[in-house]
Length: 375
Image 1: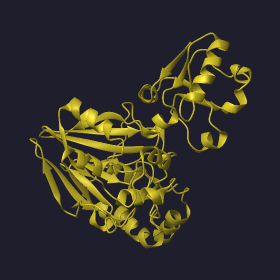
Image 2 (image 1 turned 180 degrees about the vertical axis):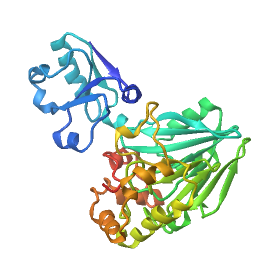
Image 3 (image 1 turned 120 degrees about the vertical axis):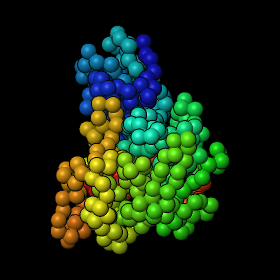
């Protein structure tokens, strides 16, 4: 017997640290580049084409006491293999509904905390790509920070909370994923905010997100203050909410720092990056709770699936904040870089409004791991 397992069910197992064995039947290079991971996930790779005549070679590797999930790119191959495994093992075997495409696009909402005076902060965790995005509730209004293109996830959650999404904010012009900010604003009559120094080539109307600007919204009068923090891009702007949370975009992560090269200007922007990390942020309240736009490793998630730390903790523990010598810092962030994100230039052009890809093209552009951090 075979049964489907949704991306949401897999996400909940990862967060809850439930054991799961995954047989990934994609080609080896796809598996090595990007796969489902987690502290309780065990996986192996056996390409689908090697099992066309049977699954005898892998049966002995399947654990007896764990749920078994077969994953492929789009679903069909995993169903075929799961059927053979279920028959050979005489037990239920699961296949990933929608394949790795759905895993890449799933967002899991978690409650970060409530704001003093009213309002709540929610983090949407994109486990399949390491993206983090946020919804802030104030009365019956909501703001979304760094929204992704899968806008249905926000719309469904907003309906649950009985809020209108009226404020869409990108901390910078993204190069690793397609923003959903503009499409949400157009669909719901909201306002799309973008740092003007990143918007020189955009082809649409936006509200400038300038240093010191305060967005006050909703019955709880939640305040979002813009704090200019260049380095990942020249316009990168952090957000301070009710003087409690610091949304750092792609400048500062829990276990690393942002890369300055995705517009081809690493040598120009590395100085800005250092000044933001080693000067601008140090002037802020060190008790601010840092909420970044990405995470790199599953160990960064707490027991509820949240990713956060205080600014002071990061100055003690984040290796990217421990490089005292400026020359060494420049070397690390310009030479010690991972491969650039898939289709990053096409993604930047899409976020500028210069390119209008269809849904399938958007999916292909984003497939792969998060690569916005310095290694």
